[in-house]
Length: 495
Image (cartoon, rainbow, N blue to C red; front, side, top):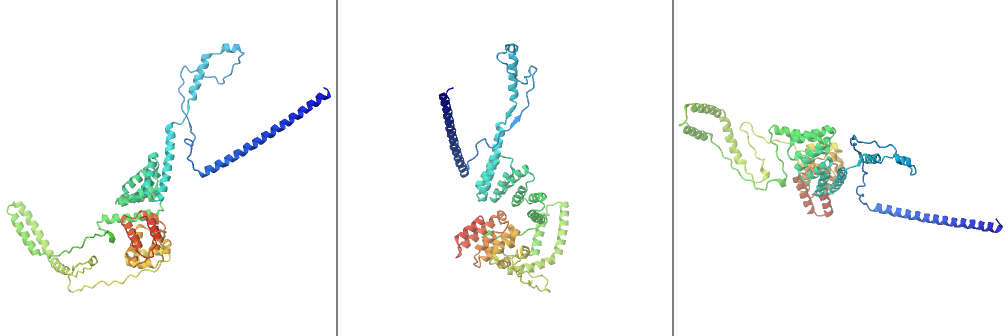
């Protein structure tokens, strides 16, 4: 090779190297630009997904599982497939002459049937999984509506959830809670029964069913539910209190004791009182009329019947002789009562005094020392102790509550707040505080901050809510009460 051709060859190599460097450089720049575009697109996608909560892609929540099904029974004509299929070269004519086409086709058919033993989940199983997820979504949405006090919407969501998954005990119990707040106690009891049938250890279902049965006056069934709840949760104080209360009520009803009905002023009858005249009865006149009536009836009676009547008359005469002295005392008592029963207003009822029949003993009015309200309690225990002595007298309770600053209600009342305690406090606010023109907006708001207030509020009866409405209407007429405070109280007390 001469020098000229060698120089040209060397120049060609140099140009090739330069072209290769330029190509690689362009390739690197292109790769870098593509990487930048990918990063920018990824950042935009992340921002979009964070700002928008899109629902999941259909059928992408869970991967379908494979179920291994039993293989079909092997027939007598089954041909075992070859363990490893070997490819016959095209030039091996001797091997092609020995190749059995029918046997190969049978092996392919057998392989196809065996591969079908692994199949995917059926559409029914996937639909069941989807329904359970839909039921959970409806339950969460119903809980949100319940927290916002939208009970109708909450019940609709719970109903749709039960339709999707009838085996979910929590949804039944949640719908029962909403029905309790709507005072639909029969439907709430049925939902709790369904929840317990699905989960016999669900304590909330027992508690809510006991509440519904108590409102339906099924005291024995409610007592059984509270006892079952106490077995599951031995430290449940609410169940212990309810058991003692229900046992006391059942004992009183078994003994035939008539329990007085206490009604608030707005529940009492609006009809005016009627004056009833008390008349004296002469037993001698009654006896003579009775003797004449007996004489008329004995005319047409048989001998045996007359003997029986004679025995009855003898026993009756003995009864009259023993009660003669009592009759004389009754006459003097009735005549005295007739002079003193001049009732002009409801406050006069219960002020009638009846003198004793013994003339030697003069009746003296019972002298009772005036009850003094306790001082301001230092703690919750002292409040509970004082409450037992003042709860039966509104005036005494009024003086007692005046000693307690309303800001101390959450601390002093604490977990002692029960339905009857809340009712008595509200009645005192209505009939005593507002009577004296006291602005109790702060009292109502601070009372709502007590523990277990929201739970106790659910068990308020319709009459108790009428008391709250009356308080709110009276507060609206007091000067200096802001409309925002009225709205706050209405929201807190759910009226």
